[in-house]
Length: 473
Image 1: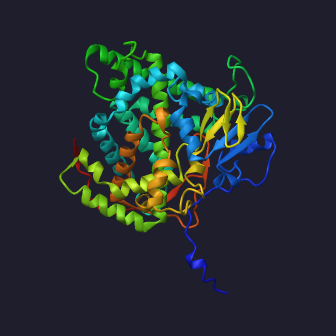
Image 2: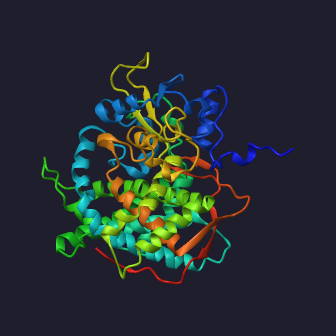
Image 3: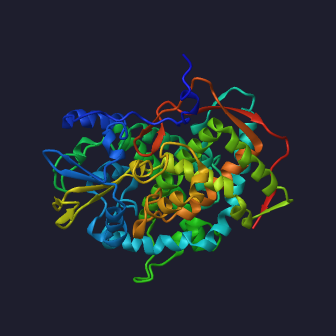
C-alpha cells in the first residue's frame, strides 16, 4: 500500500548510528578506536549534560550553551586542554599552540595571532585563488562522469593552500609533496586513540605510540624543519617572501621581544597541517557531497559563482559576495564539524547542573552533538543552508555553533578558513557539476576529524570550458 507520509519524509544526509545502552570501558575503547561518534549514546542529542564514569576518571559532556560559555569563554584558564588529548597528538605537534596551556600557550598566541589578522587575508588571497585554479585544472582530466574519490582531491587542494600561503610553494614542490603523502599515513595510524591516555599515569611517565605514528610524525617534522630552516636563511638575507611563515617567524612576542626559534616554528607549522589542512579538506569534501545530494542548492551556488566571477579580474572583495557559498559551507560544518569534540580538564571543584565535578575530570564540548541538538535546532539533521536567515538559525549561530571553538582559544585561522572554504567551493562548482554515485552513501566517522569511513565518491562533469580569471587584490 502507498504510504502518503513517505513522500513527505525529509531527506536526511548520512549520520552514524549511536550505540544503545551502557557498555564496559574496554568495549567503549574498542568502539572509540573504530569511530568516536558511533561510540557515544543516542541520548546525547537531547541531553544538556551527560556523565561518563571509568575506574580512572570521570568525563562530563556539556551541551548546555550556558555551560559551554562558562568553559570556553568565561573561565577558559580553569579548563585547559586535557592531557589525554596531548598524549596522542604530541609526536606530531610537539608543543604547538593546539595542545599547550598556560603561559606557553599565551605566548604562542601573541606571536601567531597577528599573522591571521584581517588585513593578512588580502595578502594571501592570490595564493588561495592559485590553489583553486590548480585544482580545477587537475580535475579536468577526471571530469568524465566516472566516480572520483573527492576526499583525496579536497585534501590535495587544502594542502596546496597551506604550502602556498605559508611557504609560497605549491604542493608539487618536492618537500611539500612528501609531507602531504606522509601526513595521510599519519592519519591512518589513529594517533589520538592511545590507550595510555586513558590510564591515570603521571605526566612524566613515558607514553607509548605505534611505530607508524612515531615514524610518520618524525618524517613530517623533518620535512617541515627543512622548509623552516630555509626560510630562516632567507629572512636573514632579506630575500624572504611576504607570506605567513615569514610573518610568524619575524613577529616578536610583544611582552618579551623574542621570536620563535626554528624548533618552535616546526611545532606551529605542524598544527597548521592538522587544523589548517585536515579540517578544511574535510569540510570542503562534505560540502561538495551535500551539494551533489541536493542539486537545487548546487545550482544556486553555481549561478552565484558564474555571476560573481564574471569580471576580467577577481578582486579580494569578491569574497563578500559569495553569500550562498558561505551559507552552504557553514551548514556543511554544522552537520559535519571538522573537529568533533573539544576536551578540557577541570582544575577546580565545579558544580554543573546539580552535579559535583572534581578537579582532574574531563569536560567535553562536542560540536557534533551541539550542532545537531534536538532541543536547540529546528530540523537538526536536515541540510538547509537557508536556516541561518531564520530566527532559530540566528540564535543558534550565536549560542550553539562552534566549528572553530569560541573564546580565547578560538582557532586563529577561523577567518582564513571561512575565506578559503567558500572560495574553493565556488570555483569548483562553477567549473563542474557534482553528482552522487547511486547507492554510494558515505558514512561519517571521527578520529582526528570527521571524515567518511570509506571515502566520498562523486561524478564530475564540466559546466564550461572557460578558464578561471586571474586574481587581483
